Image 1 (tube, rainbow, N blue to C red):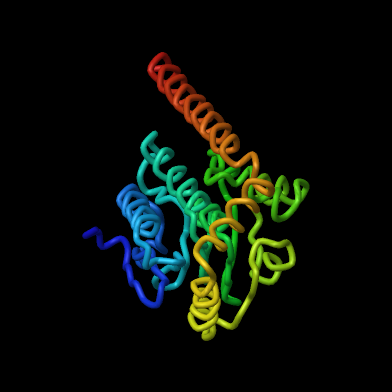
Image 2: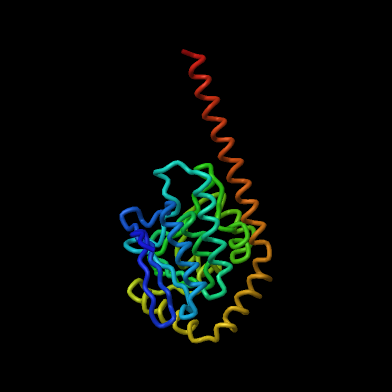
Length: 248
């Protein structure tokens, strides 16, 4: 993998991947998503990798999809493929988050098995306010971790919330001072790496099969909803353009 979108480091059984678009708050474009898929595949294939850790460079974990470019079908396919890859990976995934963790960035975070958050972490799901649907199997993960009522409020209202609230709602395992985020994440990663590979794999598989039994269906329904909203948006733009021409 040669993309500058990611930094990859392998040490002591932990494959650490850093989202590396700090000038864009690590916003997701297709190159970043494709590169992350390659890293997930590497983690699956290499026996020396026992844990995958995902983090962000600069001032944020991930600000969601890069909205400076129009959304495409490929965007949807790639972001969903990453989510499924993280959940189905037969090895523990740790998300180490700080700063803004928004939209698809938050959705990918919840695809991890354990989340360690810095006190600076701030979360938001703005999709409803900008007329798009959520991705990443969020319609399965967020109700599973936070409850259905809270999931509806967080998605529909899109209000910002803190790391302390995220921990209280079950979205993150531990909140630590920013200065301790890396060391704490490494310590937890090292513990997971010390587990028997088959033990860790079976725990993850069974817990996800029971606790996220509708994850794959959630992905399918999210895709349908996203495409329906996009089609409606395209139709609306075409109608407005036609009306404008008629008025000339």
